[in-house]
Length: 193
Image 1: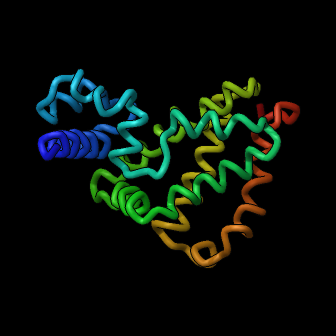
Image 2: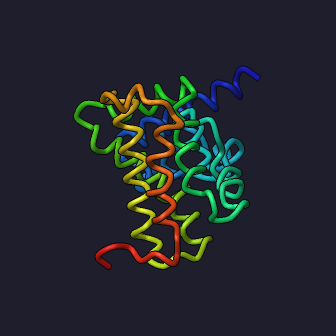
């Protein structure tokens, strides 16, 4: 069992390093396996997808392969609020928040770290939500939603800009959810498009 734990930790350590330095899009499971000194089949014993590996490496309190269907299941109505509250859930977990804050505070690689988080949110969550919902201009809408949610998280939890940092979650949801919901509404065109 200890060897299994050591292997898993080696994989997660290699994954964190890769996501910090290369970003989410350019990190591959094969590359992580090589950096961890294990065969790709060993890595796949622990993680079925890059999304699962990212969530584990960053200690996110959810598995995107299960969370996205749960998010989409109830339909478009209320999805803006579910996305904003889901962002708060990620940062409510101390370990996940610390990992993500470290991504943002990575010094010279802060741009890459932020890009890694953005790519994960876009590919694993927002793109899937937008494409499954059949929304026109899905890619643009996904980018705008990601921008809102990552900006909110960075401002509240990393920069800790007041009064946003101390405003209640419900108040912030009341402000952000309608903006996100408008971007998910297929009857409302994206302004300027």
